[in-house]
Structures are given as structure tokens and as C-alpha cells.
Image (cartoon, rainbow, N blue to C red):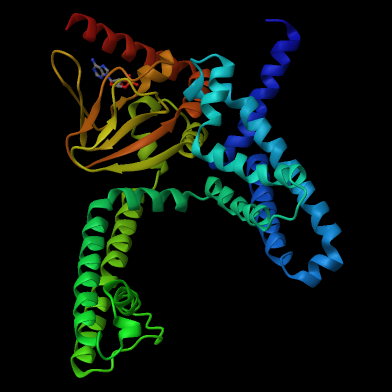
Length: 391
Ligand code: CMP
């Protein structure tokens, strides 16, 4: 490789580490993360304040300049993320432009792009379209990249979707029954407010949600009785989704809450040769994951982004021929990382298990820096690959 190209690759790698290294707590990466977070918040704050007409009239030029600075930084950041995409271990086996186009289609990158676009639209469409100004608030969603809690909420909603759907069906049923009952009870007394079922539905939603604007109220005795029952049902029904999400949140947090300690890592055979400093470094690279019995941890054919060490419990590798059981102290998920290929087998938890997760960037760093670990992993990979050929 020519020296210039090599230097460019080194720079690209360093930029990638800064952009994506915040999670590992590296100082430069953390400073950049914090700076961008502050910038996003300041930018959205400015967009809100700017809608006050006298502020816009007196300080419009300053706000515009600040917006230009923010968007310039966002564009540089976006371009740098796209440029460094080939360094992402998930895309390493792809050619650089394919890696970039795949990365550009990722949801977080689309949010980043949508956050930039309004700036240019305002230039292209010089009229003062309020909608374009409003689009700037989308920038707030850029914070999802920096918030692991947002990811947790997404996972909780996905995991509890069946219970939430059931709660929604119950609520819709209550709304239908109460609005039809109210229509029957009040349609002659208040034809303007309860003269048809859709009008009664408005009352029903406001009452079931326990908001009660008071713009529409029953006046007949039977109407008041229906109203009272609806209020009580509403209290119970609205507590349901809140409880489902709260419990899901609790479970999700508990699932991840065991701490990666020095002792845990020192007990992993692959790391037993490391001295105290070495173990402290590995502790920083690992994160914890609890998986329930039956959970599929990696799926054959999927791209690989991490390898796993079993702390407690056991997993089954669906090797063709005879499934292999792996227990505490063993690891899996290393083959695809090493070969930069797709997962060679599906791995499922046989019981509730605790795993240590080593993401691919850290895996590469570890293998590059510690020949002993590289050798030990390669020896096991050879044995496993041999077993597969034999079966
Ligand atoms: P990977 O290909 O990343 O994902 C599936 C994992 O299953 C693989 O890495 C290995 O860690 C593991 N695996 C594959 N074949 C065997 C085997 N024959 N014995 C034990 N583990 C295996």
C-alpha cells in the first residue's frame, strides 16, 4: 500500500475511534460526544426561542449565524461518520463504498441527515415556510444516538408489544361501550353533544383518559351513572399500559445490571495469564448481558458484531450433526469475528445465563495487542472448524 494511502487509513481509523469510542469512555471521544450533545440542545433551544417574534426581529441575524455554525459542525460530523464507515468491523468484509451506503441507510444516520436537510431547504425555498422552521426540531432526535436509555425504551416497547396491544384493545372496547351507552342515554337531552356516536366518543376518550376537559358533561341521571362507571374503568385501564412499560423497564435494567468486575474477568480461562493491569483493561472492554433460557444470542448467517464469554449458565451451539453445549468459562461468537464473515451457527441459551460481551472493535484490539490470546482463540477456532468438517 502506498505511504499516502496508509497514512490516510491510519487517520480514518483514528477518526472512527473518536466518533465511535465514547462508549468505551475514551477521553477525546467523550469530549466530542458531550460537545455535540450540548450543541444539539442549544440549537433546538434557539429554534424554540426564535419563534418569539420580537426576539426574531431583534436578534435574527445572531440566531441565523449560530444555526449555520451548528449545521456546519453537524455536516462535518455526518461526513466523517460516512467516511469512516469502512472501519466499522460490521462492514469490514464489504468494499468501502458499499460499507458507506449500508451505513448511510442505518436509522441513526437517517435521523442525522434529516436534521441537516431543513437548513438547505430554507435556502432553496426562500419563502418563510413555517414548516421548514418546525423541521429543525427534528434535530432533537439526534440525541437518540447518545442515549442508551432511548434504546432501552425501544427494546421494552418491542418486548411488551403483545401486552400493550391487549391493553389497547381493552381501552378501545371500553371507549366503544361507554360512547354507545352515552349516546343512548343523552342523545335527546343534548343532541348537539351526544347526537351521534362519534361525538360521544370524544367525551368517552377525554373521560377514560381521566383528563376531563369538562366541555361535554352528562346531564341525565343515567348519563351521570354511565359517566361515573367510565371514570372508574378509565383509572384502571390507563394504569395498565403504564404498569406494563414500568415492569418491562425494570426487567430490562435488571437483565443488564450485573457488574463486570475484576474477579469475573480473572476467572475467564482466556484471560488467566493477564496481570492486574491487563485485566483492568479487559474489564473496560467488556459489558454484561443476562439472557433468559431459550434466548437466541447469535443466529447463523447474520453479521457479527461481538463475541461472548459465559460467566454462568450454558448455551447450545446448533452445529450440524450434533449440537455442542458450552458452559461457564467457555466462549463463542469468535469465529465470524476472526474470519470477518457471517455467523457460522446459531447459539441459544439453555438456561438463564450471564455473558460478558466483547464488541468487535475491542476484539480486534485485543487480538492485535496480545499474541497469547490470539493464539488461544485461533487454536479453539481450528478445533471447532475441524469438528464441523468431521461431522
Ligand atoms: P460465530 O461463527 O461467530 O457464531 C457461532 C458460534 O458458534 C461460532 O462463532 C463459535 O463460537 C461457535 N461454534 C461453531 N462451531 C462450533 C463447534 N463445533 N463447537 C463449539 N462451538 C462452535
